[in-house]
Amino acid sequence: MIPEIVVKSQLAVSFVALSAYFPQWIKLLRTKSRDDISLRSWCFWVVFSSLAIYYAIVQFLLNGRGWPLIISSLISLGSILFTIFLIVRYRSKKE
Image (cartoon, rainbow, N blue to C red; front, side, top):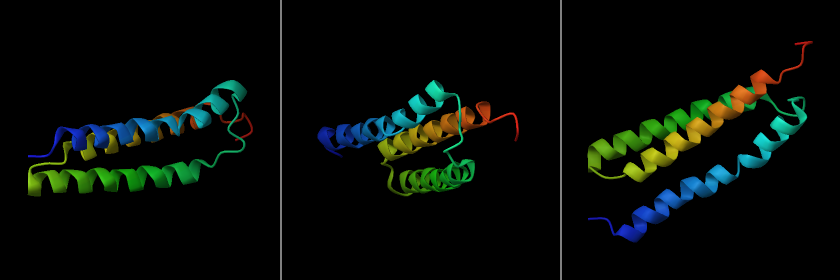
């Protein structure tokens, strides 16, 4: 059995990582411009985050534990997708 402190710390990592997205979101929402942000790099993050989810699910199926890793990977993917949504929403009319 995994100690409760380990599970809580694993879940806390996802919320700390989520706070790293806030400056990007604030910039996008305030300026309504994505000129300084690369959509292509965020699309790469979707691929890598999807691989992280796959890894987390495989580990859970093999070991019967690791659901905090699945949750944090899903939160990360959701945050990346939200960032992409904002980038696409605020693309300039010229594009």
